[in-house]
Image 1 (cartoon, rainbow, N blue to C red):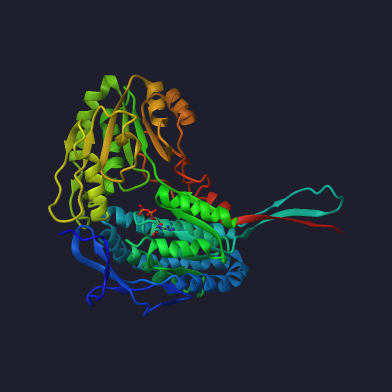
Image 2: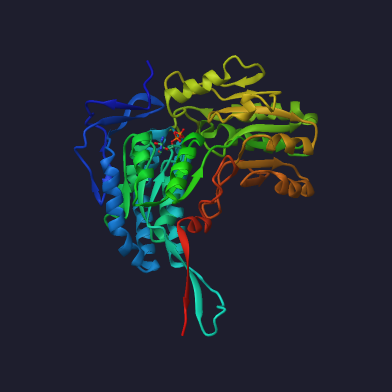
Length: 487
Ligand code: ADP
């Protein structure tokens, strides 16, 4: 029998880390209910035993964060920056261990898991710099002799609700700018990635972040999430996850008139034009679709190909996908690991079982929550396979008559996160960049990944419209105060 990823348990194993929520600089123990975080590649292997906190912990964490916020915000930017640099050092010092935790807790191939640790270090260093660059504007006043200026001020305590697929990078790409701008943080990570979140708490503590500045709550997402969204001390919410929960976050935040951002799904398309380097395009599409079992919101789930090169591209694509090794994420050459839970495995398999048009289905290990990399051809643009996000290693090939038709198909979905075009035709690439409905646009690159210092986010149903990362994140975590001083 397969296990679910997170199981409520009555006993805890002693050979694995036992973790609990982090509030006001302390790890909370004795809260009662315990769950297991398990390895999706080896479901019998427990990665951590987890003490779940109850909803009263949300108030405790928010109160601790509120008590710490004024003095944190009053620190000069360079002093806040020092803490972020020290946090980066602590992560660096434990990078091998944290990379393994990411690989074992969420099934991310170890190479990508190590890359995510490196990204976290880069994020902290980048926002340490941004903490120093807190700027405003001088605005000439109508009243003669008056000094008028605007400054960016922190929101206060912010709530971060995060998913499991980038279990350290997403919490940090929200927390680092929030802290740089003078906010304090209550993080509610995914139930399926608690160990990764607690490694962030441990390294924050080791870096000497003042008590209450960064808090982590482990527990039931629905219960803690509802409490967090209703907590009067929370003045902003940043969420990444499903469209369903994103809608709840938006509604609850709007009702409280607090700032929010929601980053949700995608049905990201690559377009392959007849003049493209087909081998190169196939390699990029294969990686974008299949690596980490397609569990990135920016993963390529559709590839739209000009009909004249459909057969040739399909052949290149299949050999590129075949070259991606499906194995235990701890293997150095793993490209495709398991999906996160048995429920995800069943959901994806039942969505594709019985569909016609499969031109490739790979081999998978017998143990673990694997889904075979699968490619379908001649997919109807209106079908579920071309419209609904599966979050698995499944790619739909769609045929297009020409460039305009390809753009029409690419834009014909509710989402608009990431997109890629493969061509040597620069005028068409420029047209594409203008016409494609996506927040992240690539030419001759894959749909996944973005530089940590560049804005990240989508359009249409993919996002509430704000952007994360880069300087864009500072806009979200602050509000503008306009000051006029008359003589
Ligand atoms: P995924 O499908 O990737 O797991 P979810 O949207 O279900 O995405 O979860 C993303 C985050 O939202 C997780 O931290 C989860 O615990 C949290 N969450 C789930 N349900 C709710 C809810 N009703 N209110 C607030 N947060 C929630």
